[in-house]
Image (cartoon, rainbow, N blue to C red; front, side, top):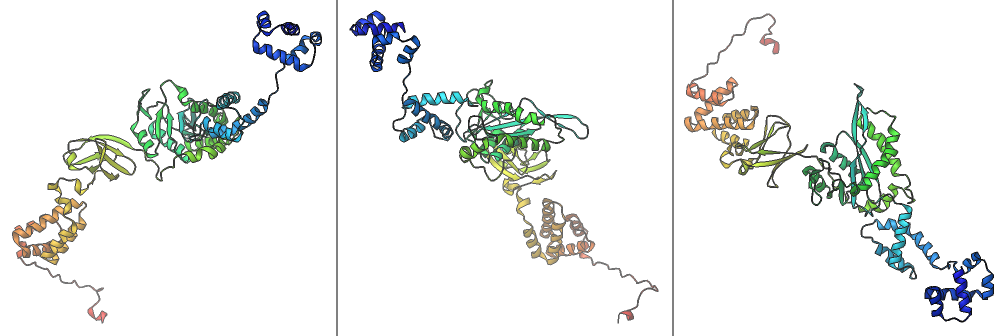
Length: 507
């Protein structure tokens, strides 16, 4: 304040500006402002000199009330809606500023607008530091702490894993208890999460667990083939987090901590005897969590999801993903590979005999691949010790067993004699396996070339009367010449009996 008094004293003594600056060391702009405020006050130097330091400070150092404050208040009121819009795909701060400046032509420039927006976001302390686009990423992880179920028979407590998923933009969370972190439990949990959201995100950000990542890498990790197949089915990508970089999946790390409070705490005194009962309790608490108002946002996760993120997700396919297992097999000489779990054999095109192929199998389908190309597929058959054969897969020289269809045998037999046709039809119907029936029919009909149609017909008639249908019996009848002999029909005399009615009874 003494410096201000000295400046005003020099000014009233008509001292030049440059001399005042030289004596006091004050800046030219500060000097001009001080002289301007002095003139606006309408007071003389004697009046100023009699004022106290406090009054002098209020007169010369009181900040000016500018319309900027009113403009800033208007801008701050727009920030909550702008933050929501910023989460939509394609929306940037530049886009929001352009819309703002159209509505308020006298508003702030982009640099000041951006500075105020950053200050506002730091003031409200958002839960996540990153700006996530709607429908862009789904963060998944397993909670560090496990839940337990109780074996109803033994009373033993069994630890179960807790799977957590969260969408980046809306923070809508999904939680499910599973038995293990293996892919048999992990992938169905991921699928249930997508069904819960009703759509698939652009990418799934996961940890480097074995069920998801085969080999970790900072730049290009190797994804587990089953998990990659799952991602392709739902038209999404897998983005593993960097090793020892939990910030890459910060949203789910925070979500896990919240779940400890919102779900674990509520279930701590309850006992569950099955995984289904545990998940019912989890989902009840989860629904309450998703419908709770987020601090500083004045809306719930569910509301935010329905408003900005639901429409941004990719539609799910009609059929759900089927978990596939795989195995490598060298195709044997018979052109059939065995699916070990079922002990069932499936045909493979004969060109791949001796080759090592990859077999993918699900609950419904068995697929064979060679050098990343599918060479054939079959509907899964769990009947053990049997074969599933496609005729086109067999070597041409061996196709006779399947190319000779039943109707061809019947037509050939009919050309010899109706009784031969009847005999062949019985063979085709009575044999347990078609290849076995085809071989017998082929043998029987080939005998006509050696003995002629007439003898074969009589041999079939004789074998039919005995009720025996096989190639061996026909061959034996022909070799022994039984077809040339007349069959002796033994007439049995009816025994006399008192209870037998005579012919007069029926007249």
